[in-house]
Each structure stands twice: as structure tokens, then as C-alpha cells.
Image (cartoon, rainbow, N blue to C red):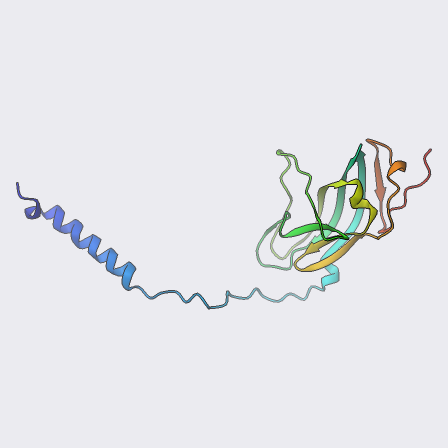
Length: 173
């Protein structure tokens, strides 16, 4: 049996040649075109994040920080609230790692929506000696002032809640 006398072979050669020509002769996409801009929003940058409450729970040499936030998504796409979309930075611009549990995924903001979320971070003792700020969409939002937290006054395993930017720990009971 001769190979090129079969109709299936000619059919496959024609389809393969047509696909190759379509791929090779197709109009190339310009790489220097700007991506479509997202619609501008009337949201003020000061309204993007409001820190409602900060809860610090010491765990010997480290602490877990729970931030209760009111956050607004100014984009037309959903955002998963994890780095690099949102970061907690120290006064020395060190990124504080997020605290996560496998069964507790990071919160997600719906497109052009505002909602209450809780973000968790794992702090070291040196992180609370200076200011803390959240970076979201290129803007920084204060979380803590530069006043140091008195680490020895924090009770191990007991949450301490702050509603202001100044994290003053009261005298031990």
C-alpha cells in the first residue's frame, strides 16, 4: 500500500499546512501597546483602608497581629489580600510576613466593593519598636506610630487590643 495514495494522509497534510500558515502568517500582537486602563474611581486614597482594631497576641519572642479593616477595592477585578497586593511594612521597609493557616485562606475583595476583613501577620519583637504601615495600591496607611511597644508588659498568650495608632500598653495587673 502506498502512503500518499490514502485520502486520510492528504487530508491531514492539508489541515496541518493550513494551521501552520495561520500561525505563521497571522498578524503579530504589538508588544508595546499599553494595557487597557481600569476605569478611574472617585474613591479618595484616604478612604481605601480604615483600621478598625489592632489585636496583638504575644507568643514568647514573637506576636500575632490581627488587623480588623474596612477596605475598599478601587479596581474592576477581585483582589486576594496577600502580598504583593497588600503588605505590612516596618519603619525600615521590611515586609512583615503574613500569618496563615492552611484551612484559613486570605480574604478576597470583590470588584469595586467595600468590606470588613481581618488580616493576620507574624511580628518579631523588633517590629513593634517602630512604626507599621500597610501598603495597598501604592499608598501607605498607618497602622502604628513610631512609639515603641513595651514588650515586657505584654502578657504571653493574652490578646491586647488597640483602637488607635498609638499602641500604649498599660501597667500590668
